[in-house]
Length: 454
Length: 93
Image (cartoon, rainbow over all chains, first blue to last red; front, side, top):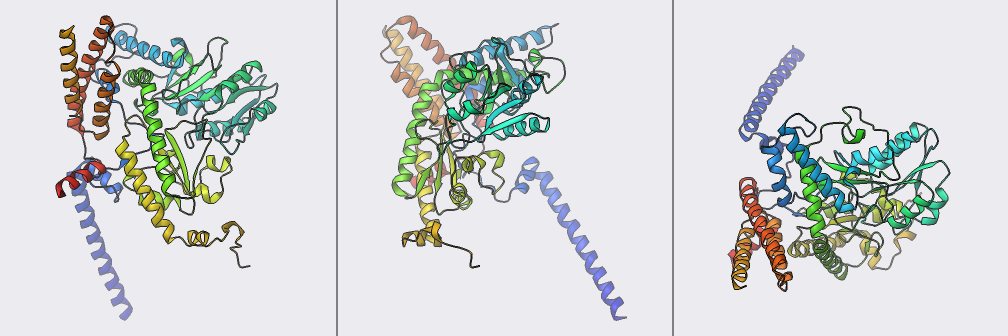
């Protein structure tokens, strides 16, 4: 009797809950329908900032805004000239093809290449995949060894893993504490059956610029192909594929104020570099990358390259000034701040700082008015310390406390001052709360402490 | 010669005025800074063909800015935190 009453009671409660839930769902559905896509977006993140307090953007290594000059060149190909650039039988195709070829010339000019050597892809990740896997697989009958570094982008490292599964030998060269590779170690790692060396031009996390000229010279003398991931370098530092002896080079559109979803792989013609294309299809882009070339995107990439070429000197002066301003401000006010990466061989637009005794994620949360990252966007979801910082031998705690400041063409002095001021304030605040910081102030050597009781 | 001078000055004014219309804070600040620096760095150029070339380029840029300012007005979405902060400060003053 009692049990049945309680059971029915539960049932009633259950029904009530069900009804209640359906009411709520209906309400949210209505809300979502009313707000359209924006409602869904807001539902995704409760902590989205309100309108008119958009954070300052300081993450230029993750992506850059589309330059209005670039969008202006793209729009006609999104609105009017929609032809397939590979259509050979009508004017729609011809005008798109002409635009695509102009873009090819613009890209080639920026890196000192021949337009025929420019292969359009979907981005630097695809370019890196074609380069690393493509070269290794094409020459696999005679050569089974590939060399890369531990600080490469995930897509190069992962391509390396795939090659290892296919039976290739892959050497992941360690880097020195300044982030640069040791040329002697590279030479020692080379074998008669080495087909490719892949070293990134400018590192995306610590901004270190590898000695590309020397690597190119060494690779050429050993008749090994040299690929460089220059997604963070092209348009920002001078790149010349001939004087630097680069055989393959990857470019990303959206890192140089161009559109997302487009990139370039430069593939040398003399001496000829052959690749086995990972993607099969209509044989576009000299058979290396099948699939219709997206005209509006490559027009944008071409325009971005042209603007970058014209503005490089002006931009680098501006970025260097802002970079020094930021670093000097923070260093002057905060003790125990370590700059990661070599001081001289680096791109100033990427500033990676470790704030000792402050947890990086907490600082990022506190600095919600500034769009920053603790490292590469690909790994920004995990709380693991960056593998790049671990590769340069940073202590675990310092790797956890690092923040990357990305300065670009559109960053202003005001934004830098705002960021520096916020950063200093919150580092001080977080340190005041930290027992570790207190102990350091009292002169305790943190490293000598045995934390475990047993 | 003076005709060119007034032409350049008027172009400068127009470009600067257009640049200030960008809704996006970063594009607006860049347009103003770049315009000022560009005209200043080219001040000493006396070669008339070079000047004509630069005038043509500037006119093209002005057209681009006019279109892009409009697009920015159509799709702009909120202000940056530092813009809002400076506005509040000036209001309280």
